[in-house]
Length: 295
Ligand SMILES: NC(=O)c1ccc[n+]([C@@H]2O[C@H](COP(=O)([O-])OP(=O)(O)OC[C@H]3O[C@@H](n4cnc5c(N)ncnc54)[C@H](OP(=O)(O)O)[C@@H]3O)[C@@H](O)[C@H]2O)c1
Image 1 (cartoon, rainbow, N blue to C red):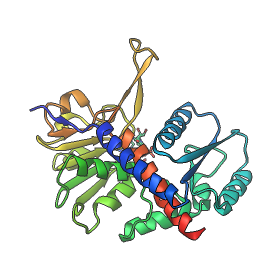
Image 2: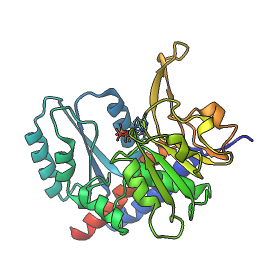
Image 3: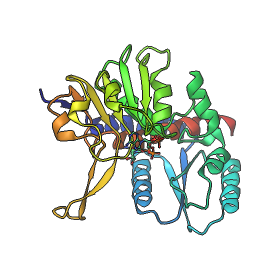
């Protein structure tokens, strides 16, 4: 058996086409959707991510502004800036790029973003709404994974899903999304983490395994059952002298061996990543519609 690749690009292109049309509709109603990204410090990966978000906004007709701030910015000044953005009616969506410099408490910052403008879905109110089953904005990577599985018609209702990783940005919101009592969700979800005894015991029983831990090649072929679906969220740099940059990107799954055993697998790069950006665009439209109504 060779697994079918769950490629992110065609799904992301479909999302961008939908957003382009919806954004044009909003503009015709006098609302130009706007996203303001706050980037603090010089983290190289963050700069790349912010650059790809800016380009995607441009492609679909969303105005984007990036506020590039020095790593020396104090938490107080950042909170004041967010307060200003919350009150600025020209700003629809606010995204604070993570990670923040170590002196700044990310939870304090994420709690300061107006939930109505929270395009990341990280605000406590939006996480709570997701858990309660009436979501507003949903964290982009989990929302992208669900959209990917829907697109490729991977059955979810009644499936056993094992998620490795319990972060607030991937594992926990994904579990909350997939467990919902809604047609096309209704999964039985198990979350594993660094204190889980014998992760393979769980993954071998799973219809779908989501690897979101940040450990290259952690999920091996002997840990999954034949015919399962593997969603590889991990993005890890591993040294590769043959590569132009001296490194290459790999996921959390041992791609080459699982390819011969699973029914579906997401590649890295080119799997979940493009969907994360796509769902950010969707969330920006959602908040623009909400803020447009208030204006
Ligand atoms: N494709 C995308 O768009 C996208 C988006 C976001 C993240 N990512 C990637 O996804 C990966 C995870 O990101 P994250 O932000 O969720 O990471 P994170 O905040 O570091 O969380 C990692 C989670 O994995 C668990 N974990 C770590 N090592 C483990 C091990 N050996 N066995 C079992 N569990 C282990 C941790 O357990 P504890 O809680 O017990 O510490 C934690 O819950 C990273 O590679 C990141 O780059 C990709």
